Length: 359
Image (cartoon, rainbow, N blue to C red; front, side, top):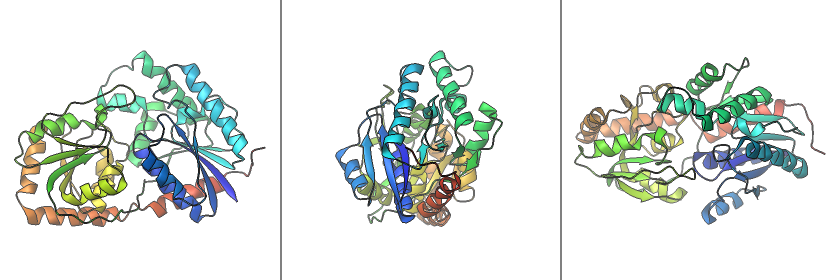
């Protein structure tokens, strides 16, 4: 049987993406070898992985590309992953960040999926020249994009941003992320919900927190307030729900009338898709990714404008019929982004690689 090694982290949406992909690869009679970098998976995450037939979970303890402290540490991670690919006898490898390709000699073809990167993040969130600590990480990303056998991004908007930032002189494919709906039934008790890595400045949750002061309804946020890179956010008005497992998060979506994402930077936005599948009305920042994915199926507001956000939220929440219609439109659009389609398209990339089984 074909073996494919997938690198991942247990911190955010990449974990969910990886498990969806692993399920799809199993349908193609493949054995997924999931190599976890960064913080160890939780007990619940290990149980999720164990529920996928044949999946092999390897907790490497290696640093993530964005938590490695030096270029040498990142190179060591790449070499360790290449060695793991050889010892696991895989047919191909998929890294979740191009920087993980490193300068290693890989025994099999490598697909680099770019879920995010520091250079495009900085450009969207801060602007100006990259600080030294990010510049070497961006250089590692550029090198990985050049060295990988194939490169894929989760949206055309993000692929365009990568092309504009790195000028790689090669094509970057687009495979939209997908998600298997998680059924949940609940009364719409929380008017507005957001979810994800709340500590990430690119998510701009502070904008929603400021807007929440101007909205006479309950606003909730699911996800961690502190990141492994020591980033953190303090919420003043939003009710923090903490980190929720898959079932609890599905219930939170079912309880919300509106899902809001105020992100300044978002390569795809898996939480938006999950909320749309649950029938939430979508209120999103007006950035290229969200326009590409949710045009005519969401309300858009200028990024970083809490007053405009609050006005839009008040308008939607004050009209239950409008909110219900918006939720129906979002659910209908979400049908485009299935886990099966994502897995099939990604499988096709691996299947097109020359067969070079690791020794």
